[in-house]
Image 1 (cartoon, rainbow, N blue to C red):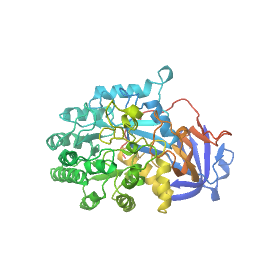
Image 2: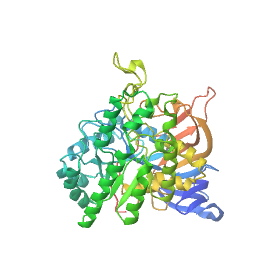
Image 3: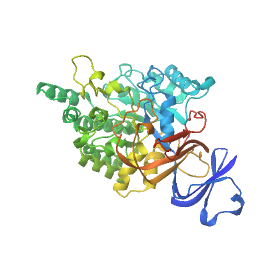
Image 4: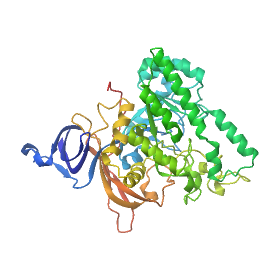
Length: 490
């Protein structure tokens, strides 16, 4: 079927255009400026979006879906519904928090089967497309190249205990053994860059001083900037050594939180090291100064690394604008509410609720990311084109998928989002489509809302106006059509 979408604000790599996007069999086949609209397409079925912006579908390269094994935390069905409602058309799933962890081909096939056949009558249960990261853990270097051949997009490692016993941290010696295998695959290595010694020393000092673990300042002090700085310095040293050996690898720093690392990272890029960096919506919106007063529960703001000061937040935004940070990823890391230890019924008898040291670290973000980000973009007079680059184009490049997705261009999938940049709304639970309706942003007034999402030209989500009772009326318009995306050479 050939059809078209028309908007006065189509966000393309060449800027914002008044244009009509022609779609055939799920592919963008033409983009015509509306001032020179060709007569031959005037009879096409066309949806006129008016002043709604048309963005490329968002791509999240840092999603914890948790299935198989912990589907009660989140699963493919709920995560991809939340993502579609949030404007995402592709998720890259992390290899941990699921059981078994994706550290070998057998585990990858279990995850692949769950996504592709867990829906009705053995069909896909995913509303949008997806891919998988593999895990590089202690002593699994012989599994890395088979994982690459089996279709993972790259490899994720932790330099610190990740909170799940089956996904082991990797030390420098194991990284040295793994890096030649990773280099041969040509795939990126994504690293959670914090080191244990800094954190262990900070925790010991806090406990000796009788620190109050219900106070966010205690948790922040337990995840010092130096834990990130020392880890990043070690990783950059390994990158230099690999480059000198003629075995370079693509290093990607996930969820950067400390602005103190920015000079190091900027210098490494000037040096020519193969390096990319991401940060997250929560680091770009929340601040340490306001967490204790969060009305939804302060521990909903716990993540690792930690959310830092307002001044730190501004430096992260500046680093996005100058290119030191390449992209934004959600780090969607959901859990059942009791794991956040917010209330007395969430803890064991005698335990104190609200303790940051006991709460699960992770913030669910798929339904809210674009509005949280656009709220901050408006404050800084940033553009939709910049936001699309950070949330679509750069993530597609990292995941090796940029020949098919990541921008509105002829030949690419018609993965598209109608976005109302002028909308202003108060976030409520009925707007959250992931499994557990908790969020540090509930009750906040945010800017910008997804109105529709198209996956390969098919409308999968539509947000209608509120009904007479004030209830949000979100609609998922088709059965799950998502499929796994394999790598491209671009």
